[in-house]
Every structure is written in C-alpha cells, then in structure tokens.
Image (cartoon, rainbow, N blue to C red; front, top):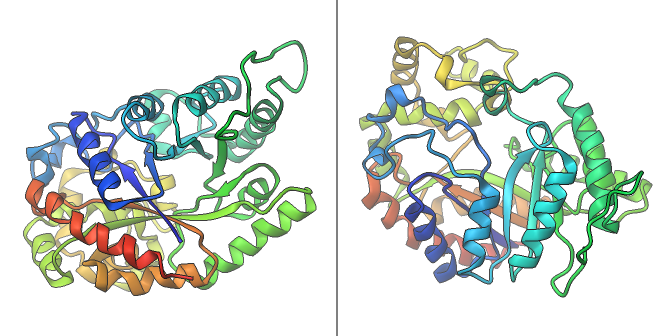
Length: 362
C-alpha cells in the first residue's frame, strides 16, 4: 500500500518544513497540504493546547497551492491538496493552478477536491447551498481542461502542455455519499474519503466507485483513505496526555459522528443531524459548553474516529482497510496537540514504523 503524509498548513512555515524533512527520511509516497480557512480549534481555547507553544494561532493557515509550490523546490515527492473545494475557486482557475504545479512538482501534482465544509465557507461569505450540484458542474469543466487544455465551449484554452513527462495532474475526489461516489467514478483519478470507520463500508463504497467508472468508460480510480491519527509512545501514554489536556479532545467533533457520541451518553453540539466535519464550526460553540462536554468525553470515544497509539497498536486497524481495497493511505498526524513539540518530534519513529508496516499490507 502507498503511504502519504499531510503537511501541517500552519504558520510558521517551519512546521511544514519539518514535516517535509520527516516525509523524505521515512520514504513516503506522497505529501499533501490541507485547504482550511479556519482551524479545528477556536482561538479562545488554543492556549490550552500544548501545540500552541509552536503555532501561535490555530487559524494561521497557509494556502495549500502556494505551499505545494514552495515544497516543490525541495522535494521530488508527489505533492497534493487534501482537499480544496469546488465553491471558493472556479474550475478554470483551479485547472491552471494544477497544471502549473504539475510542471513545477517533479513527482507530479495530486488535486484533491471536495464539495466543501461549512467552516471554510459561511464565515467568509460563501454560500453552502447545493454543494454537490456545484461540484458536478465544477468537475465537468475541470476534467475537460485537464484532458484537453481547452474549455468545454468557446475559445478558452491553455497554451502549455497538459501532459508532460510526469503525466497530467491527478484529480482526487473526497466522495462519501451516493452522488459524490458517482462523480468520483465519472471524473476522478483517485478516491479520497475521510469519514469511514468500517472497512466493510469502505469496500462497499469503493465498489460503487468502480461500477460508476466502468459505466462512464473510465479506468477505476485509485482508492485512497485519509485518517486522523495521534501517534505516540503508547495508547496509555496518550490517554494520560488527553486527560491532562481535555480541550484537545475537540478533534472528536470532526471525526466522530453524533450517533457514536450518543452511544457514550453524550450529545453532539448542534444536534443529531449535524454531519461532523461537514457542518461543525467550533468557533461558534460557547466556550462553557465545550469545556463541560470535553471534560466528560472518554478516550474510547476519541478512538471511534481517530487512530491513537504507537505504530504497533494502530497498524492492525489500518491494515483492515488495505484488505478492503485501499491502495493509498494518507495520515494526518496530530501528535503535539497533547504533549507539545517534543511529543510531535518523538512521533516520527512511529510514523516510520507505520510506513514500514504498510508495505506488507495487501
């Protein structure tokens, strides 16, 4: 299985520089940058997160395309976005950026696209109405430009080659539900879901993607998976750190759905209909409510959506996705949100061990 890492998009840039160096030393297959306008932690609580000693503001997030262009000068690894959305950026502009980066990135460029998350849109004046319909129109234009260098209609064109020695930019789609799975098969070169906890469900979704690709007369997209992890010395060590810094449990708002919170006797902020990372805006939740909720949030709830522990402890769970058809695992390692900078640095050997384990997964 291929193994990729997410670069932190935080200011200062030395955070990404450190991760890029770690990725090179580990021997990963790809490096990706997130595209977020707001971070997962509101500024009012950031001083309670140990990583704040290194990152001063949780909303100081770099543009992922610019970050990839910067990284392209120092690495031969494939670079990508994981993921941008189809609402804030127009398809011709994204196509031009992706084609430019394909020329700049010696390892090629992976363009991750999604239908958007509320926290990156409505606080900045963007509409979040009909996001999947918007994404479908976006993909039609994007796919045509990437394949041909021209707009679907009219004289619009791009004069430089759209396919060079390292190929074309690869379009990855973060599809989870029925329509987005169809669009993945019809337009994408890769499938990059996040909200999947069950390998059997992952296999079913991947089968749908392949079926849609066959109907469209396209090759089956490469099957990926983005996972959130906090790697460290041991699961029990991380339990102690989360207990010492309960505000860091806020990550569970992104990764654990309301039904799972109810299973643990807790109510998800915003109600049972909220779609976790798609809808939640932590900045809008009252601080007192967050403190009360997270103080009662058990470590076991975090494990329902996050991979917590050392490489030996999390590898068996992730290996099940390889058996379910996953071909490219991408890890966002949040080490340091508990334990601080030293914990983040100390997690690199665990990342390396996990990468070695992934070589044997089939």
